[in-house]
Each structure stands twice: as structure tokens, then as C-alpha cells.
Image 1 (cartoon, rainbow, N blue to C red):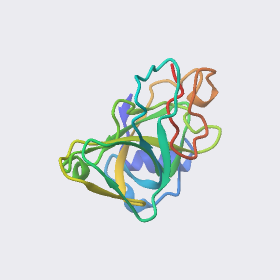
Image 2: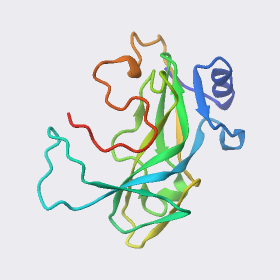
Image 3: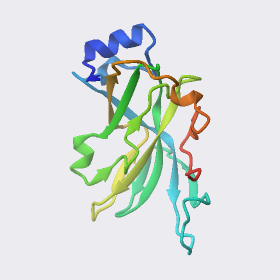
Image 4: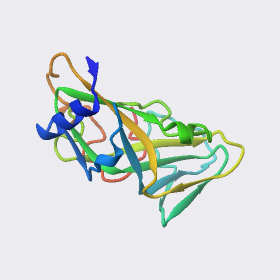
Length: 183
């Protein structure tokens, strides 16, 4: 498995191994693609009890970003990407924060950094961002701002079954951020 260069990414887009909608070539770096924040978020709220991951419970409030959203210190929200992606069964991706936001103490994924091969294969899907601020100050997040970057990896052999076609996959055909669906 090797990380793809900008040339590899463009070639994979031509062969439909990678789809990005909308795609703007200006967001393509030498070995990654910047992605932007969509206009929907789920704001985590205190529910006054312990959460059991095996029993899904929605403790989020849906909000639309009308221009900007003020991320408070130590606040956790689920965001969505403006871009919808689709990966073939021979390409995987990794999401990482951008250094400009990292220097502000804003993380865009807590643990879910891998985008599995075959994600978005049924139809290009949004990514859910796990956004958290460790900054002691509030930080504005703007709809449409560059918030993260994707690195793509060509697998040595294609997967036997892509993410969208596995019976255990929970987040297929995402259009907006989704709360956890349990174990």
C-alpha cells in the first residue's frame, strides 16, 4: 500500500477509483486533498446520565451553520464535509486535521481517521467530522472553510468487499452528520 501523489489522485479520479463532488483542483496538494466544512452540525449536549455505547442514544442537537458557528472551549460537535466522496475497492483514505486549525487547538477527528475502501461506493457520501476544541478561547468555524485533508492509499490488492457492501457497515450513504449507532 502506498500513499498517492496529486498525479495518482487525478488519475484515480479519471478512472472513477476516487470520486469527489464537488471537486476543486485548487484544493489538491502534492499528496492530499483539502476538504471543507459543510453547513450542518450536531452539537453534543449534557443529558445528565452515563452513556452506554452498546445502547445508542442521541445526545446531539442538530444545527445548521448559517455563515459561522462559535466552537466553545472543550466543546464537542459532529460536523459534515461539503465534499461527498466515493472510493473503489482498491483505494482507502485517511483524514487528518489541517495544521492551521491544529495550531488553534481544533481537532477534526478523535479516533475515526480511516475511510475504508468502498466507502461511498453506492453513492458519494459525506464524511462525519469529530470536532473538538482544546483551545481555552472560542474559535469560529465557517461553512465552506477548509477544515481537514484526505490522503489516499492504493491497496496492493483490492478488498474482497467494500465498506458500503458489508452487512456490519453503519454509516452508508451519509448526507449529513450522524450520531453514533452503537456497537
